[in-house]
Image (cartoon, rainbow, N blue to C red; front, side, top):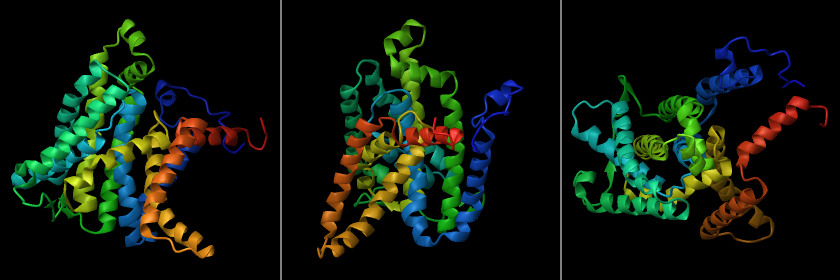
Length: 358
């Protein structure tokens, strides 16, 4: 009953088109933002920043980009790790080769070059789909891995292929401490999430969903499949490229091509599946689940093994992570194909009727 929307009338088109039409949602999001910007820096230590919060924010941004392509447009992609690598190395080269290059412009340039690569490898989506498109995007992943490993210009002619950045500043303010990195990543994620939410509610987003549901019928009613698919690849690659640049610049600081291997592409796809395809909120749920689960298993499995008098090795914990991931993906596909976002939606519907059962 305390989540009901009775009496909340809309008296204008602006009010009717709000992202959060229910007042309780608006107050909850506002409280969450205040806690994220003010409460977290006062309560969290350095370990939680480096191990959970900063990776969660960056991977949420990457999962948001993948969700636009896979969840909203229905184009399966296994090249997201490669697009992240393009964004990271493009931002790195623009940052070191152009004098006095601002950090924000370097990150956006990484997204721009990732967009070009994403559009190029999205061209096969005009003729193939499903598993064949997944194989085509997987080829993009392998090509990017090969290019950044073999072409020394991308890594500033370093023999090992490892690159690093330092002395990061935004508007004259240094980005060095974990708190500063957290606030910076949170601000970028908030802007991109707001833009993505409005984009999927626009005419372009409706074209993506029409192509996802039935591309032939969408073409019959006047939607251009080429424009819809390539625009989805462009927007998705841009967001993923910016996330890759953040992953290299903010989280890692120094990285090599192996940091954006095919495992990263699969983990991003798992985030979308577990969180919920076609849901902005699902990107956050999936990223939180994938980031927190390995840390939870690393702490919980040795404790459980100690209860039964068993000594658990680190190799077993690593294998257990893969087994749990696979089991959860199968479970979500069978029980709840729409993922954690659907469970969240059902929970809100129950709260609207609580304490009544129906």
